[in-house]
Length: 231
Figure 1 (cartoon, helix red, strand yellow):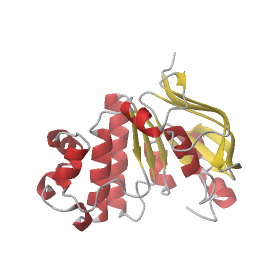
Figure 2 (cartoon, helix red, strand yellow):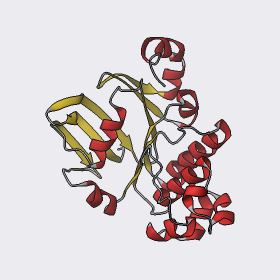
Figure 3 (tube, helix red, strand yellow):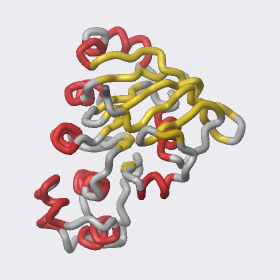
Figure 4 (cartoon, helix red, strand yellow):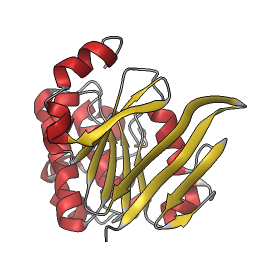
């Protein structure tokens, strides 16, 4: 029996009374990386925000660690949720060291994920490169040993070699530590290299799901049909 750590059942969500996401069913199991892909405006970030507890569902259910929940985001984070937003999750006017300290992450743990951080511990985060900021964001999230990681556009604005490093770190966290990872990613082909399964979202609904191998075989068709307006 699989160990599903985060799940949406018939989930509708949005802003005010307007649903942006409609009747979404998805799940992520322990040790699994799942990619949520789709054009800009498809509803991917809204889905993550609702799973994280930042937005309340308009209908349906979020299940976290096997139980239905409407707890706020800070409560879910205390219980094992990690969330890396598309705006890099660092305090720009604090040093790298103080960012880790604020997140209660031991530097030695952060260095295990990203050895490059060791050389910039005294640097203010706002003076770090985009890649360094995103390494710090991910180290802050993974260093708290989450059971579930939601990651929104880790690769935004970054060079391909850095993207590959970030995604491989996510893959290893799932494989070696059993983290359930739901990944929204603009670099679809890169994401498919490390994802176990994929959900394709269009206009707030899941229109296709399958293993990465199944989706890779249809990727040209998917990009032509669904991804031409965005990512």
